[in-house]
Image (cartoon, rainbow, N blue to C red):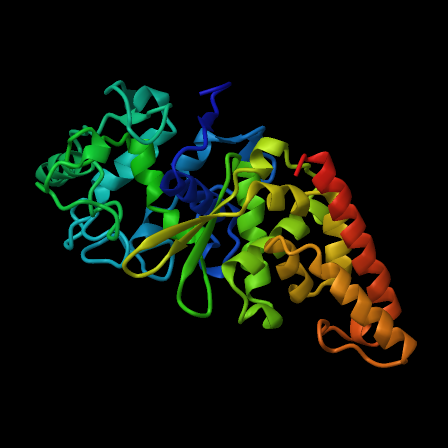
Length: 365
């Protein structure tokens, strides 16, 4: 903790998604999350970004409404065989008190203890899950043992079965040791994903929580726009990067810009895609992003995303021919501002080509 605030550092994609999902709860972006906190004073920040990390006000943990984790229409229903975290809380709900002790203890240093390291984070926080006033003491003990290691309780798709075979990726153990803070955060990872029209879910992972926060928020907003329905995650990521570069008053450093990862989750698998670093650097260049935003065409964006930059000259040639013949240009452009004004489209495409050529020389391609 720094000045009493809890510092969270970027780690694995699952942990990062959990943090971003938790921030969405604190933001109350969705209608069903309103009232998530008992305390909602605007005088006190709930969290703040600092470089690549995010700092959480510990006070929020004493204000979380635990019932929001027992109702399927809120954060998630953790009781019984739920969709994401099966049997995290027993079907009868007797472990609800233990779960509440866990949440309250995360924000109270007097209730925290040292239990060694955590395989998911570098700043482990463990809570003293002991209370003489708890009604179901046996359930408290079972809950404490259950959450010690990463299992299907934490993630239905990725978590190993209890007593499963050792995994070489997990130090020849059949699971990973998790601190109580990570246990809580991962329960929000599903909220960080954006569901597309084909059923796949997408999360944008980067080395900075602030960048993750904005890129995933922009991705979510762009994905629901009508002309984005048939677009790939890569197309939408490209538009998100353009929106971030042109509208968010933060400049991506080169390290962050070169390490953007798309996590694509299906019902039975998780896939990863890294946008080539040279393409990421182009899309996060303010001048190039501004021109792409002005053009606003997915076809032109796809040319840049796929590195087919010389094809821009072909588009410019077709635009010039349409301008000379006083014709509309519908081959490459869907937006009226471009098809009805091919001269302006021509100028922007040529300007885009010139800027990309200049940047490629600058970056040593």
